Length: 384
Image (cartoon, rainbow, N blue to C red):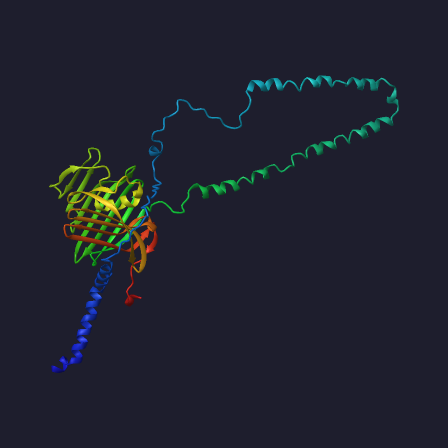
């Protein structure tokens, strides 16, 4: 039995355990190391502004497009070329018939019969021979239809070819309708984040799982002249049917209900009030159009946070250097930071919020906009 417990066997057993352990938790340790490298990020002063983004929903209904348009009392439709009044045409038509009666010199034919020339047969055939040449000009008169008028209509197609190119400029492009971001939360939890814009309706989802526990944060709302206007927010944990916390926005009465279902509190809803995830996109879309960076954020409580543009920070995401503009807000024990990437439509590539010591730090490791991948997940050396 002691042969089995030799130092060489024990060393091999320990190495095997380490290899299996590394395979089981390697990804977690790798993500933890990546997150630790992001913990301390230097922020430098900047004069750069957070520019607003354009939104092209492209699905406005006919009623929305015609909103505010007053219908006309009457409608006149003209088809074809505009001509002079029909009464002027009849007088012009009778004009040609008048000269016709003047051409009555058939009497000259009688003068031809008066001389006693019919006795001479030779002149008659000569008169018949002169008349055949006159029909010859008739075929010449039919030649005018030969001019190729139809080909003149072929050049115009070149004009419509240039119109589609100038119809819409997409050099910078509008804010993406669909965004997928893979975050790493607290260094160990992989969270999948999605922004989806359909017409004027938006949905923001963030979901993750760890050790059999699941979570889902979802915000729904619409876009209007004030930017994002959320209608509800849900915080699910494990049970996807009943939220742990929920927020309901009533913009008609400007009231908001928040908290555990059945035990919700009610508070005043200010213009521009949002949940924490809608806040990130509110900054991304509105940017310098916002009248103030002070924002009402509703979570477990209602917070009034004066955000400030703290500066610029360079993040290393999946081995790629990404410039960000940092917005920082604090209210007593609550702290929020949004790292927005101006080169990627101000999308939030990092979100941190500290709620009385409970810190959530979401760092982007992969990012896709409208099907275009701009950031890919890190690859460990053993996977290459």
